[in-house]
Length: 444
Ligand code: PMP
Image (cartoon, rainbow, N blue to C red; front, side):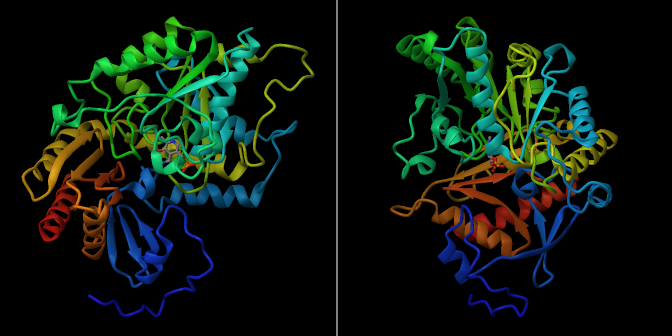
C-alpha cells in the first residue's frame, strides 16, 4: 500500500542510520516521536506497543518521571565533571549502589564497577581488564581471548575480534580472533520451552581450544549467558556450568556479557543469578539507565580488581577510560533507574510472567513458516523458515506488518525477537501474540 508522506517528516538525507538498510528505510520511513509506558507514538500520532523495550533497554517502560527529574536536577547542578584524576559524588554513589546489587549477590564479590558509555565500550573494557589482570599476576603470555560462534559483543574492534556474527566481521577480515565453536542443534531442541535439554557437550569445545592454543596463551573467555542479537540462542542446561569449570581449571577468566540479560530480563537481576554461575567480569549497559542516557558498566570481581591495584601508588593501575565514564547525568539517571527497579520489584517481575509469556508465544506453533519458538524470562524468539533465495525477507515483512498494526518487534535474519518492558501486563502479552499471529498468517 503506497504511503502518503507525513507532513511531520524531517529531512532524511543526512542521518546515516546505524544497522539499517538506509536506502530501503528512507523510501518508507518509520519514525517514533513519543513514548509512554508500554507504548511508542509515531510521528502521526499512532500508538505502537513496544515489544522490544526499545533495543532491550527500556526495562521500566518509557517516560519515567523519576529518571527525567533526576536528569534535569543533575544537569542543573553538575552537567559534566572529568573522572580522570578527579571525581564527583554521583559516580561514586552510583557505583556504591550497583555494588549492593551486583551480579551473584554479595558472596560473588563482583562489586567493583568500571563505567563506560555503551555495551561495546563495556566489552572492550572487560577484555582489556582481563589481559591487564593476567599480566599483573605474572601471566603476561595470556593475551588471547576466546569468543564463541554467533557471539555478539558490540561493534568495537575488541568486540568484533571476539564476536562470531559473520556480518559483523565480513568486511573486516584482518581482525584476529580465536573462536570457540558453539552452535546449538536446533533440530534437537526445536520448540523446547525454556532452556534446551540437549547440547551441554558443546562446552567441551572450549577444552579443545585450550588444548590447541595452550592455556598459558589464553586470558579469558567471553560468552553471552543468553545470546540476544544472534537471534535468542539459549544455553543448554549445564552448559555454562561446564564453561565455568573448564575456564577455572585453566586459570582463564570468564566474562559474561550481560548487556541484554542484565537488570531483570530473565526474572533475576542478572543472568549470573539465574544460572547460579559466577564469572570474573560482567559487562552491562542498556537497562542500567532504562535506556534514557547512554551508559555501560563492567562489574569486576574483587580478585580481578585487587590484582590490578598493585605497583607504585602514584601509578595509574589501568590506562583506560572514557571522557564519559561515570558521567554525572548518566549516573543520576542510573541511580533513579535502580530505585525504580527496586521499589517496583522489576528485577524479578519477569519470573512471575515467564509462564504466561511462554504459553502465549508457543501458541504460535503451527502457524505458517514457524520453524521454532524459544523463550526464557521475558525474552522470546519466533524463527521462520526463509524464503528461497531471499533470507530475511519473510521476517522483515512480518516486522513491517506488525508495525503497521501497532506492534514493534525486532528481526535478525528470519528470527523475530521479543523482549517487552518488564512492566508488561498479561493482557499486553496477549496483544503482542495476537498482532504477531495475524501478521504471520498474512505473511503466508
Ligand atoms: N553485548 C551484547 C551482548 C549486546 O547485545 C550488545 C548490543 N545489543 C552489545 C554488547 C553492544 O552494546 P552497544 O550497542 O550499547 O554498544
